Image (cartoon, rainbow, N blue to C red; front, side, top):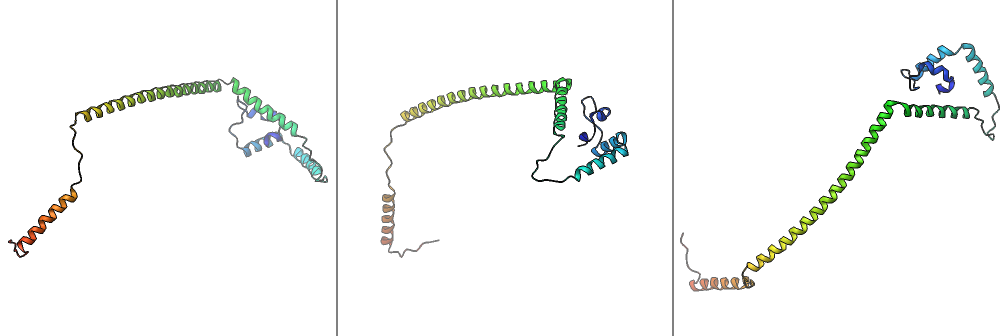
Length: 183
């Protein structure tokens, strides 16, 4: 807002080579500009002019007039055009852009190389897995061929339990159950 209250030439002595105002807070900048360029009479004249504007009748149906919009747009456009042109010609900015572009190009190349290496590694791994599966199948077949054929195991648990139960019963009945155990 301070930029709109003063003319461009008021800021010339405060700008650096890039057109930026450095080393001032907003209030310090305002105080400096007021001390250097504003006369008390000018302030009184402006207050009187603004007072007349404020006393005008207000019609809410009327579209407000923005007399300074074109001027503001021109300053805005001028400021950013100047900044863009300064960036285009500033050696530091150009070097930074060149460095950034070189880094981006290198990153893109590294991504492409990683993708190619990943594809190669995937293909090699798939081939190795296929080879190992074939070798495993051959080894299993060879082991099965070398093992002698054994008859299938039968479930003899029930027969074993019955035989042991019969022996236990014979021992109990033969001794009459009166046998004493010695310690």
